[in-house]
Structure formats: structure tokens, C-alpha cells
Image 1 (cartoon, one colour):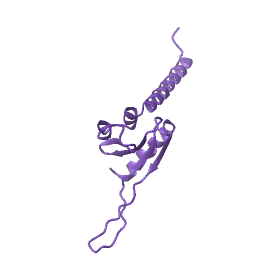
Image 2 (image 1 turned 60 degrees about the vertical axis):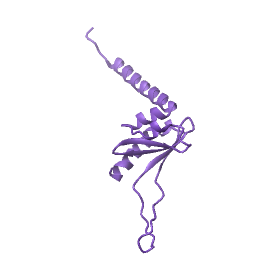
Image 3 (image 1 turned 45 degrees about the horizontal axis):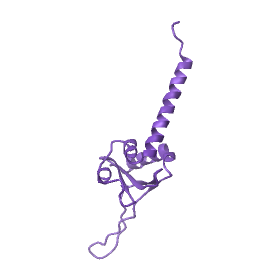
Image 4 (image 1 turned 45 degrees about the vertical axis):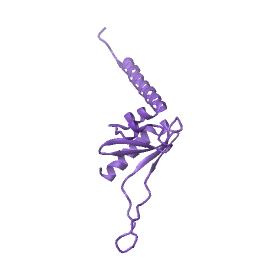
Length: 130
């Protein structure tokens, strides 16, 4: 996946859902510094970027995006279970709703409020035939 696209996806997820976490920050891995054939170290960084977060349930997570989809790693001795950490999800929302009941509740409440606002606005502006 193009590193610019990864950055864009992660930035969008952070902007849209930061309030759904206790903490959500962009992060980059520690650069890989291999020894070459002559024993000289050369700095080479990976393009892998992720979000480090603390869910509303106090679970420390690292969230990744790739061409396979969104995936997660727990930093708390994997309380999520292997079926979650070994899976990829089509959307950030699908992943987080599987991982965090607090995220799912906030997402559903926010969506419901937005839909109710649209219904209210539509009913105020609607002029029927009668």
C-alpha cells in the first residue's frame, strides 16, 4: 500500500474518531538498522505506520491499515483473542466495533443523533400537498 495512502487513512481515522478513545496518536515504528556485508550499519526505516490508542475499556492497541484491510494488535498480552488479532476488517469502524463495546456504543449513538437531526430538518422543511 502506498505510504501516502496509509498516512491519509490513519489521519482520517484519528480525526474522525479521536473522541471515541481515551488516547489515539499516530506512530511510526523504530527504524531498522541492519548490518551490511562489511559490518557497516545503514539506517533504513520501514514505511509501516499505525495508530497507538487506548480504548474506552483501557485496552492498549496498535491499529494498522494495509491492502488487506484494517487490523489490530493488543499491547496487553492479547486479551482480544487470536480471531480478532489475526483478522483484517474492511473498515476502521468494523474493526473497532469488534474490539471496543464503548466505541460501538458511541458510534451507534452518534449515527442515530445525526440521522435524527436529518429527519428533524427534513420534517421542518417539508411542504406537503395538503
